[in-house]
Structures are given as structure tokens and as C-alpha cells.
Image 1: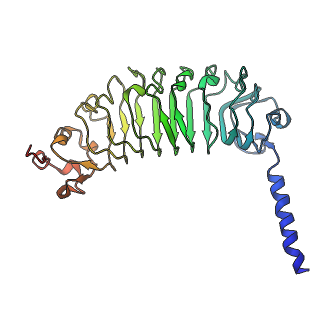
Image 2: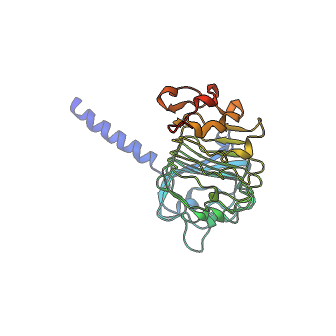
Image 3: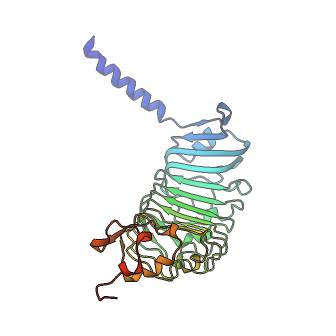
Length: 313
């Protein structure tokens, strides 16, 4: 009797796994939230087989998760009145077939697209170009992410782009330079090594927040905040920045209500940073790493006389 028990358990576990792997969709009426969730899709045909259409609830979030298929079919989400679409752990051989658009039918409803948990990222963002209500694009846990100039094919309605917890393979110099209505750009908890002013619109008339928290930046360009007339919040905490140019934050320094966060960078506190002592005190909470005699001291607690260079300057 006991010898048969492991076999029974194995069969039970295998059966359970089989059930979990079956494609399914959950109707939002079964919960208190306006969600429609589908999972374990393995074929483009699953969209027509398992989705119940129409789904016309207001403020609906549609989630497709844990799926592996060749591509998203044409009009995959038609008659789904979703304002938010999330692809979570969705792996595609190609995002869509030539001449087809999975998002056709969502032009008047979709406001946010989320690609999370390693989901396939499109090589061309033109597939989203007709989404006339799209405001936010969020990417997280992506691998070998290319921040390509194709992002400029997103509609001009896009205001927010957030990248988080992702491995960035490369960034084009003109990444989102044509998106004139951007208000917030965030690249957080990534491995971004270089940031160029040319990556953003110039001018960037509506950009008010730039968040580069926890990356691998070693420097910032001197024109970092140039031609950003409403920029008021910058976060570059926990990078590898050792020094700054006087011009880097000059457009922001005249207004104490503006915020620049620098903590967590290995600052070299020498004569080249004397100008920074004129910054608002709230900006100067970063600690020095070098020289040794200033290690651990906060920039806001130092004087010009303490910020010296080896040549005596």
C-alpha cells in the first residue's frame, strides 16, 4: 500500500499541472475589480476560443499572462473595452504578423500598455501608433531591452514612459526625441550606462520629471537639463557618478522648489564641486567617497575651503 503512494502523488501532481496549463479566461464579474484575466495561451487561436466578447465595462484592465505563442493575432483584443492592457510573462516568436494589428479596435479606449515579467518587446513600436488615447507605456523585467528610435513611432499622446528592473542592451541616441508631449520619463533599477540629452525631445516642453534611480551612470552631460522649461524633479540616486558639470543642473538651481536627488553616488569632493555648494541645501544630501579625509561627509556640511584639488586649487 505504502509503495504505491509515491506513484499516486506523482499522478496527482501531473494532473494538477495539466489543469493549470490549460488556457483560460476569468470574467471580471467574478471579482470586485474590473479585470479580465487570461492565461496559458499557446496559440493565436486561443484568443477566439477563450475570450468572451464583447467586454464593454468601463475602466477595464485586461491581463494576458504566462503564455507562449507564435504571435498576437490580428484584432486580438477587439471588442475588449480595456483602458489598461498588460502582457505578463508572454513570450512571442514575433509580436505580430506583417499587415496585421493586434490592437486594432482599441483605438478609443486603451490608455496604458504594460509589458512585464520578461514579456517579448516589439522590435517596432509602430503597431501602437493608432492608439489615439495611449498615455502610458511601462516595461519591467525585460531582458536585452533595446531602447530604439522606433519608440518615436508611439502616438504623440504618450505622456509617461517607465522602464524598471530591466537589462538594457543598448539605447539609440534619439530614443524618444520626437515624443513632444512626454511629461515623465523613468528608467529605474536598470543597468543604463550612458544618458545623452539627445535621447529626449529638444526642447521638451512638457517634461517635468526625469527619474534615473539605480542605474550604472558614471557621468551626466553638461546639457542634461537644457531646453526643459518645466523640469522640476530629477532623480539620479544610486548611480556611479563621481562629479558634475556646473551646467548640468544650472537651469534648475534658481528655484528652491525644484528637486534634484543625488544620494548614493560615489562623489569625488574636490575643487570641481565647489559650485555645487550654492545649490539648495535639499540637493546636497549626498555623501563624499573621496578624498579619504572627506569620506562619508555630506556635501551640505562642507565649505569651499575643504573642497580642494591635488594641484592646490
